[in-house]
Image 1 (cartoon, helix red, strand yellow):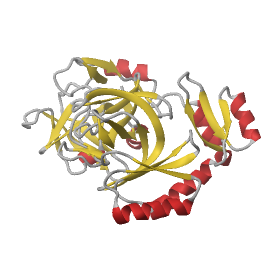
Image 2 (spheres, rainbow, N blue to C red):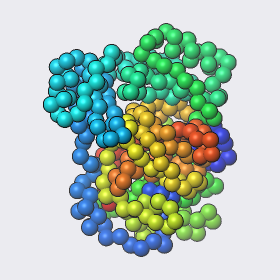
Image 3 (tube, helix red, strand yellow):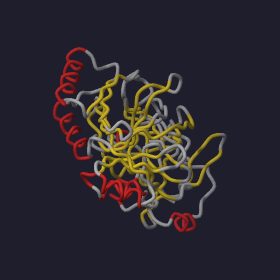
Image 4 (tube, rainbow, N blue to C red):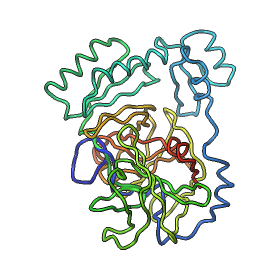
Length: 357
């Protein structure tokens, strides 16, 4: 589900409640030295991983990769020459049956035949299959359509059912308010001397002014760009005089400095923060995932086993001091467990020429 306003249990875009872990509230916090933070960041993105470099350059001979608990990078390959290149790079090569191109073709077939609200899919490098998930709302004709599509594709796809319903999560790191909705602030960012924050696009899609309080007394900014569905990111320009430290709330009033942005990797340990449920941790289980919300399809998402709930939308996903993404939606909750999807932060950073600090 997308994590939308806290009034629904479906798969939700997480739009209106702030995730408190990653980004500090925009008001009433100590000022940060932006120039020092920019120097520490060294640019917008972190160093590309061996996995990303290898899987990008090997094309048909690679099928993604993942990180083991001990930090070992594993790259899937389909021939011996590619395996030798991976080994020479210092990573571990794993021979698999299906190439990345084959798995992408499988995803294309699913888009054509199984774009059903309440479903999602992602290429899983550990099983070398595309895993299709269906939530509890997929029944009757919808389930029959999905089963038929999976059966026609064959061995490159695996189907599973998940508890709850996929929906957006409206919330963020610190709570931010617009109209009668609450979301989470994702990351404070800069473009030159201009200050903005990123949150979920399903939060900003129909929003103008944003406030730090539910009564609309403390103006913090105005939406200047929004992308949802397709993507799920929104950009809000800070109002003059708002204090905006480049940190993430990690509980008990403690904030962690965020000084760079990076690309998520399967197997990576991560944390996410939200105003509804606070700080929770888990693992990246997929990248470039597709989720079919009731409001529309979003692609290119980070999939995790971290829980979230309505009101957590827009909040930050981090690994240490590295920004990875903003909460989009998911299924389940933080009592029984679930899975959550995140909009990668690198896409809006690159699109708008922004940097974290």
